[in-house]
Each structure stands twice: as structure tokens, then as C-alpha cells.
Image 1 (cartoon, rainbow, N blue to C red):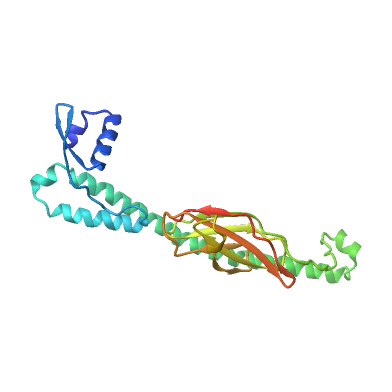
Image 2 (image 1 turned 135 degrees about the horizontal axis):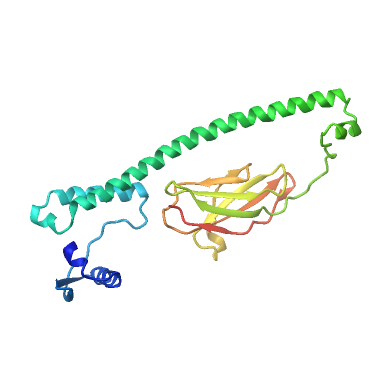
Length: 246
């Protein structure tokens, strides 16, 4: 069907034409009239569940095949317009990659500055502590928070507010949660069927209250849970969070 012929139809009709094509039928168009007249074999490009980079590779490969067609065959598909759209998608992906590199550099720089800030403030507090001779009342008057005496904490409670979200990278899910205690170790598990307790799989361990799950299947739904442990034992499992990687 030529693009000039498509312009004869409203959007709702064009959507229906796409459904007809997906069902494996061909069409004949004349003066705004559509006739479905035969079954045809459908085609598959492989976009589903593919990463963004893989989808662009599929587009490039198909465009390369189109350029080998005769001029008459190319006339009906507006090949120049398709090439422009694909090129724009490539430019957008390149901008994202540049921004990722810039963000990675900026995060590393921020961590360096943050560490220097912590050390500077800690040193200033130590000078104050020496000046007031560690007297609790004088420390409070000087703006220092007095640390409470250490107490036995026991078995940790379950981690709270577990969240799961896809990153911009294919096959990645970033997990975050709130720690129940200052000093504890976390175990992260995942499953594709939360109703079956026997098929939870260990992803890994972490001391921080975050975890990056990688090498997952793009587009597939995963469920996650986390538990905390210390020298006194393991907590109950957290609530479940789910997400689909890009």
C-alpha cells in the first residue's frame, strides 16, 4: 500500500489495517476502499524482548536489505523517510551514551568531594572534642551530638520499603531498601513465580542497602526479596518488589 493511499483513511481505519496485516491477510486499496482478499505468510523482525541496541541493529539490517531492492520496490516504502527515522533513533542513543559517561564521571567526582567534606567536618569535631575535654554538657553546648552507649541489638527486623526499578541498561534492575540496623549483612533473592516458595534463587549478598541485579532477561517480570543478618541471626524476609528490565 502506498503512503499516498494511506492518507485517504482516518487513524482508526489505519489501526484496523495494521490488525489485518498482523493476522496474515493482504489488502487491495482503491479510492479509499479496502478489500481483504487473501491469506499471506506473516514476517518476524525480532523486536520483542530485545534491548534498545539490538532493536537498532535489526532496523539497520533490514534497511540494508531494502537498499538492495529495485527502484520500483523501494518506491512504495518511502525508504528515505524510514532511513531518517532510524538515523534519529541512533543519534538519540548516542546522546544517551554520552550522558551516561558524563554522569559516571560526575558521580565519581561527587564521591571524592563528599569524602573530603566528611573528613573535614570530622576533623573539626575532633578539635572541638579536645577543646571541651570530652565533657558531655560542653559537647552539647558546642553543637556536638553525644553518642548513646552501645546496647545489644539482637536479631534484626526485616528490611523495609524494598523497591525495584529498571535501569537504562538492558537486563538490569536496581533494588533499594531501608536497613533495620546499622551493622548487618543482606541476602537478596529473586524468582519468576512468587507463588512457589521452592524456586527463589540467591542473587548475592550486600552490606549496603542497595543491589544491582544484572544479566536478567529484558522484558521479563521478576520478583525480589531481601533479608538482614548479623551475629545474632537472620531477619524475616522483606516484602516483595517486582520490575521488568529494559
